[in-house]
View 1 (cartoon, helix red, strand yellow):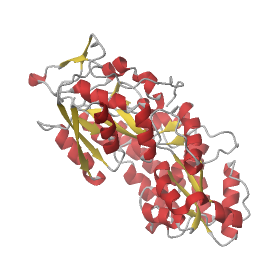
View 2 (cartoon, rainbow, N blue to C red):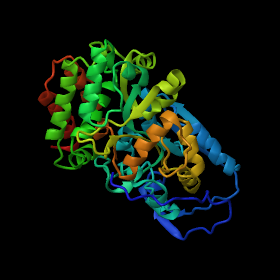
View 3 (cartoon, rainbow, N blue to C red):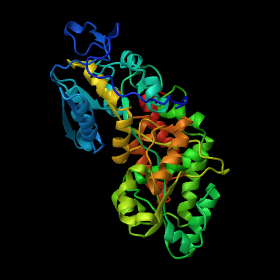
View 4 (tube, rainbow, N blue to C red):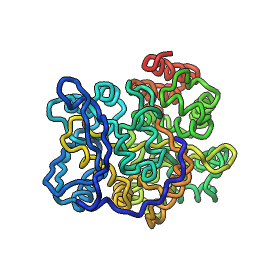
Length: 444
């Protein structure tokens, strides 16, 4: 996600009725129009003072409600009703609700759902609003690029913009300061070899080096963290975006996989990892049962509450010790229904997500802010996370997690890494299974 340095944005949303309506007309999709004809929408950055009610469908627990409250405080004539659906049911339910006669006006973006919603014309191409609101300057390119796709929703990073981010994240390494000090590790690892050396010292001291929740996504997060620093982002990004001819069967991915297998054989990964859930891995780390935990910034608030100043964070270090240029991350993002009666109001809410006020809400909610230049006054653990994230994000080094590559990829990643941990799957077999899932979706 190559990114130009975003322009610092100091302005708040336009006040109601103070700006002239833009003379732009957009073909915003055919999903909400009769007879299959393309619907014409007059795009405006102005929202009137007439009462408006929107519905917003979302999953998990991003700071959605707080962002709604922030927006509606600025626009008291607007009511946004949140509709929460558990993650396991979200993809199926959002496909059904967005194709219904009364879909939610705004929906949390999910690439699995978009594979049918985009081709069917059920969500708006946001290009006209991106131009009207100046989103290329307000949102980091890294956050927008992954939310663009062709009309088949199979290749990302190209085509039209279908959502904007409402909160970002980054994958890294949390560490227990006391355990490292007791093991004789004086400095935060600067190279991948330093990291391995620190884990060996911890193991030699009788403690567990890593907490890993391979029963769920924690296992492939560990593999992904290694891929970020051993792989070639020039090969990974086209693959995860679905670009024709791409492959994960490459030297960088092979090295990451072999490194993970080596860590297993050295005893850095607990034998119980395949039976450990992500929540249990995090709890074990928080209770001082391991020195390191590879996960995202979303865990920071809970870990800081339990561990206080004893927890730190760093991005997976590079082999050379050079500043990390790549890290996996994701965004909580929002799309607009092609059938909404109030597309400009919905777009105004999306625009609000890039504001300084929203940045604080996103950060307080456990996410990295969309405005990567936001002044957050972070301290301690949050400051360490912010420093690492900002450096990578501003050089456009945030890349999607590998399950983004195809709808069935997670079903290959999780058991595949479990096989690496149990030493029943070879690196070649693991990567071949990932590429097979990719080929089945994108075509070989």
